Image (cartoon, rainbow, N blue to C red; front, side):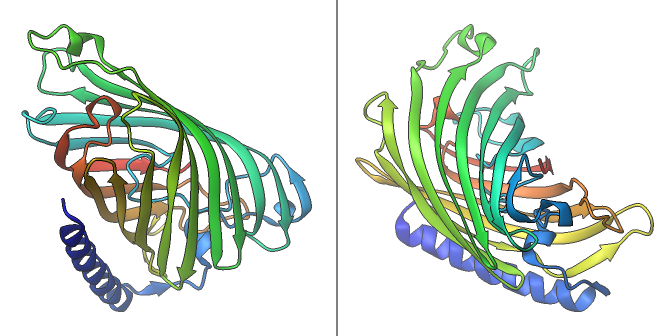
Length: 311
């Protein structure tokens, strides 16, 4: 995908998201005045405010909705192309994070926070007899996050290693396995403007194996979280969410990956002081270099539906 095409796709997605948000805001009856951090589940509680808080709840940086490698647990069905990867793919992620401390939390959702986070992302070929494991990516990182009112950010160093599945390697014509692992330093800055969030930054690779991996990438995106909600009585409350995430890799050529997700996020109908853990039902589409480690040299197009869970 060229830069011009990526820009055109992002422009169309942005217009669609804004139009969808306007429609949703006028059509949905219940409107809340909660802040963006509260809407994305990082508002915090009164006991988690002050100069220094050891072992706080949650994070002050809202999780990224459309990033394929966001630290969150999920299960998704994806439809792809057999020539690229597989036709029917089951993608799963198991993730968790543990904050060590938060400082300067003078208001809900604010502060400077340090912790550790890890995740495993795996993909399975649902068209094979034994649901062959295609690829598994292991991530471990140390995120330093902050929020000051509508401005937030994340700086982290993380490691990723990727492995092909055993059954996949036993096929008659298996792909060439790479010893793929790297460490990278990332910086993302984010700004919330009412229902809209924009973020951008990049990553610089500290160590690369194989050595022909790109030495940096650019990362940015937009998200829409309207104030309006749909109330399902005492069962749940739902909010429309939509997002587009773009990563641009520049090595011998420029490769752009665009990920788009939209759907409903569910929580408790009446939030207590300790907010509920939320889950989302999202339709998704991805076009670009494969986000799955061992297949990173291949261009893929994936469309699907997934359940996503906050930490």
